[in-house]
Image (tube, rainbow, N blue to C red; front, side, top):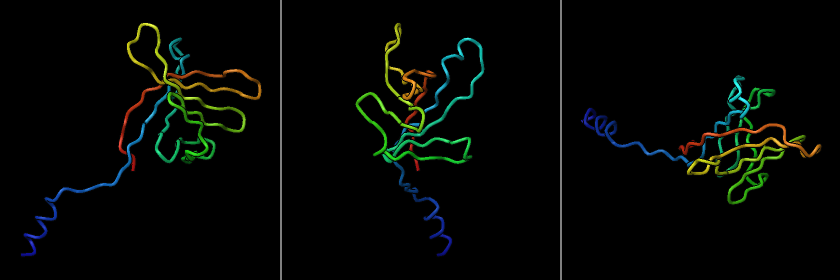
Length: 124
């Protein structure tokens, strides 16, 4: 009888509680000129934007209420700059592409531009 119960428990589907989010990988647009850049990786969830901080060697979550969110754009503000994720359509392409811009708001200039790959995923 115990074996039958164990078999039934093993065969039952497992239910997992996970939220959907976006896994975002951004590559510096200067890479088209042959320079190698490591992609920057982010996870956008209902609770906020998560990234790995190399200086702190840990994952950091920026809470959703601290993000500037509109229909086609999400902006995360830091002490010296902001990262703006936006959907744009490049000439010759049929659908929108996510890009990210690093903007130095103190000196009022863009520092870097990135093209991003986005995948919907279950985030636990």
